Amino acid sequence: MTAQKPSSISVSMPTGRFAPSPTGPLHYGSLLAAVASYLNIRAQNGTWLVRIDDLDPPREMAGAASDILHTLESFGLHWDRDIVYQSRRLRAYDEALKMLQKKELIYPCSCSRKDIVKRGESVYAGHCRNGHNTAQKHYAIRIKVPQQTLSWSDMIQGPQSASLFQDYGDFIVRRADGLHAYHLAVVLDDANQGITESIRGADLLPSTSAQMYLQQVLDIKPPQYAHIPVAVNSFGEKLSKQSGAAPVSMRDPARTLFKMLRDLGQQPPHDLETCSIFDILHWGEKNWDLQKISAGKTL
Ligand code: GLU
Ligand code: ZN
Image (cartoon, rainbow, N blue to C red; front, side, top):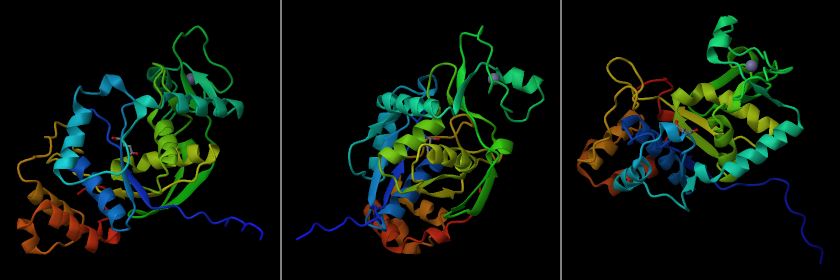
């Protein structure tokens, strides 16, 4: 008997993730992204992963990672498989940089932000593509972007297109302080973890084109993207540590989850409000409809 030829169609298990940066405790908006990605995966019987994006030590807060994990558990958001820490994946990022170097897609750049502004550029226009000021000890590594329009469809925000060259310019893949850039790490980690869907805040929508370009040149199949509206304060600022957002309250997780289902457009029945977090999550899983989430950028 001859062995059966493997099918050319690879069916991957729905796999989602929540990837917080440990810069502080979770606030309402970041937990909302966790809940949306969790429910969308659980509704498909898929795998939900948590990754700690601890790539930028100067911005991190001691104890934040364990605080975040504790919050997720308190809200009944249990993850599958071990947590991945970006700080332990630096070798993989360096390997990818080597590959990009072989393809002659990256180059050193020692321009400061001031230099770029002085030249009157709204985005970096490729000044160091043909050589940089080698007298500068510290330099970033940038990737050349093509004059190409990228188009894709966001599961919530609908059709998108972006011109990397005009909107972004050659972007940084390794910073002048030696740290790897977020776009590079996130793309490599999502691929490494087999992520099939990336559900996150709409503040990251503009990052998607840069990440899709990296996927293209690194031969990585992109996950499906869905960007949920971000929670804002009364000044219209995104909730974040910088805008002074309060950590999500642990006093009444059930009520908070109920409010989140509402904010995600899921129309939970009133009597669910007084149920346990398990009942609320269970209802969320059974009745989940991603299409009901508002396509706005803010809540
Ligand atoms: N770690 C990133 C952040 O907290 C999010 C990564 C992502 O979801 O792509 O802003
Ligand atoms: Zn430069």
